[in-house]
Image (cartoon, helix red, strand yellow):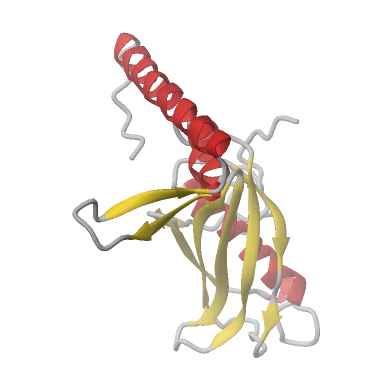
Length: 202
C-alpha cells in the first residue's frame, strides 16, 4: 500500500480547510509544535477532547520519524492522560523517535502546557514504510538480527577482545554478510555519484 502526502492531513495539511494546520519543527529524531484549542475541539464543556490529544501525539510521532529521513506509519500509541487542557489554553506537542530493530521505530511523546505541566504522554511504536538511505533494511538485517548470535567477551591477554561464537556456522554467516555489505555500500556510493545525488543521508 502506498502512503502519499497530498497536503490534506487533518493535523498538518495546509490544503485541509477543516484541519489544524500545525507547523512542526523537526530535527534529529525530534518533533514539536504548538497548538491553541478552540471550542470546536472540546469534549466536556471547555475541555479539549481526549481523542484530539491522542491525534496530536500520533502526528508528532510520525513527524519525529520523518526528521530522520524516513517515512513511517503508526503501529501503537499508549496515551496516559495526566491533566485536562482547557479550551483557549495553548500547549506544546513533542515526540522523540529512534530506530530499534528491523523496521521498528520506538519513542515517547507528550502534550504539555506552556508552563511545563504534562497533559498526556506515552510510548509509541512505528513501522518503517520507506528507506532512509540505500541499503537501510539490508544493513539492519545484518547488524540487528544475525549479529545478535555473536557476543564479545574480554580476555586477559594482548588480544584484548575476541569473538565468542555460539556456532561456527553463525560466524561464517555473519562474515559473508559483512562482505556483501561492503560490496553493497560501494555499489550504492557509485550509484549516487553517477546520478549526481549529493543528499546527506547521515
